Length: 147
Image (cartoon, rainbow, N blue to C red; front, side):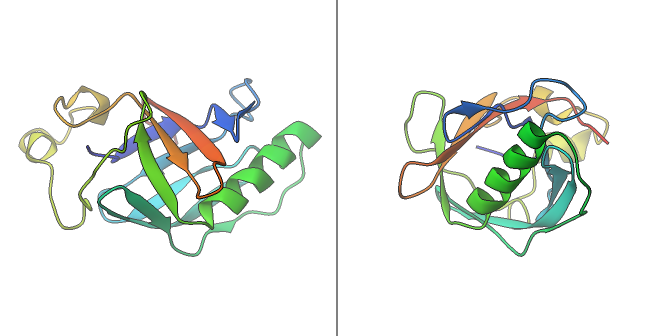
């Protein structure tokens, strides 16, 4: 399974995130171990690594703007969850194994750099859940790249 690409955060610990595009959290996983996105109001950036089905994030930084309470709460919940070790789960709840993209390049993307990651085929799930030891989770369906 490959995480490289952009994912919408549709739920945090079972609670839906803001649906409006301006405040909907999202994450983009780059192949060089960098992650960036939007927490609801604030831009976020950091590092990520995966070992088997275990996903960890390095220090995360963010802007410090204020916004609607629901979007601010979503951003805070996302930061709290990204600070913890998480397990990758497929849409059916089964453990999802992945290789660290920094160590295992994706031949489909190397062959055609313009290829949208979601269209690259094998190993590219359309939905994953990131689950903490206590069951808290982040629901992530794949989407097109954002900026």
